[in-house]
Length: 270
Image 1 (tube, rainbow, N blue to C red):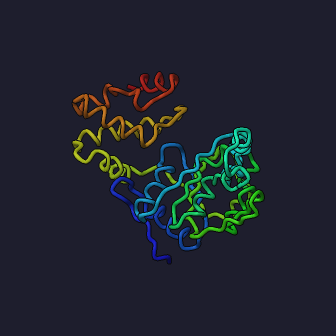
Image 2 (cartoon, rainbow, N blue to C red; image 1 turned 135 degrees about the horizontal axis):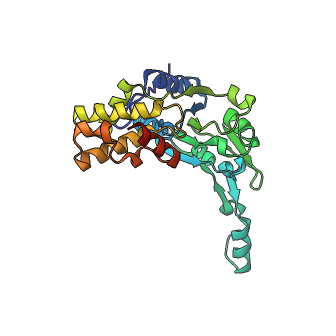
Image 3 (spheres, rainbow, N blue to C red; image 1 turned 60 degrees about the horizontal axis):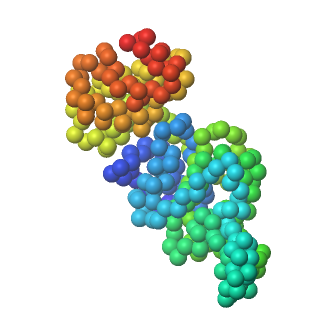
C-alpha cells in the first residue's frame, strides 16, 4: 500500500469502506470515481483528502458546456490578435497566450496535488472518453507550441458523478469506483457532532429520528440530505426549541424539506 494514507479529518467523517477505496486508488495510481445521492459529501471528500494528506486541491467544476480541451489548455487567439493590433511586444511568442486548464495545472505542478473533477456526468457523453489518453498517460501535447506537458507528479484524481448520465465502459474500466451510501444513524451522529460538538443529546436524537422518518416516507420526492440535517440541528439550537416539540411540530421544517409536495406530505403525517 502507498505511504500516503487518507483518514477522516476533524471536519469530515469517512466510513472505513470509503477510506479504503481512497487509499486503494492512491496505491494503484488510478482515478477514484465517487457516486452517491446529493448531499452525501462527494465534493467534500476531495477537500478532506487534500487536508488529510497535506496536498493542494485543484477543482475542475464541470458544466454542460465544458469540453475536455478546456481542462488541458486554452489558446487565447483573441488576446494575441488584440495585442498585435496595438503593437504589443512579444506577440510572436505564442506561449504567452497558452493558458493551462485545471488538468494541465495539476500536471505542471511542482508538487503532487489532489485534482477534483466535479460532476463529470454534467458534460456530454464524449467528455469522459476525451480524457482517457491524458488520464492514462499523464501527458498531453500543445500543438501551437510543439510542447508536451507531462505530469511532474501524478495527481490524486477524484471524480464525482450524480449518475445523471451513464459513463462510458472504457472510462469506467480505468477508475476505482465507490458508491457513498447514505450514512447510518451511528455515522450520521458522528457527522453532526463534528459540526455541532456541543449539541444536546436529546435534541440531536429527536431531530435525527424525525429526519430518518421523513426520508423513509414512500412518496417523498426529494429525500433530505446530510447537509440539511446539519442545518436543521443548527436552526433548532438557535431557536431554543424544546426537545419534546421537535417530532410533534417539526419546527423550521423548511430547512429540511424543499418541495411543496413533500412539505404537504410531511405536514399530513405530523
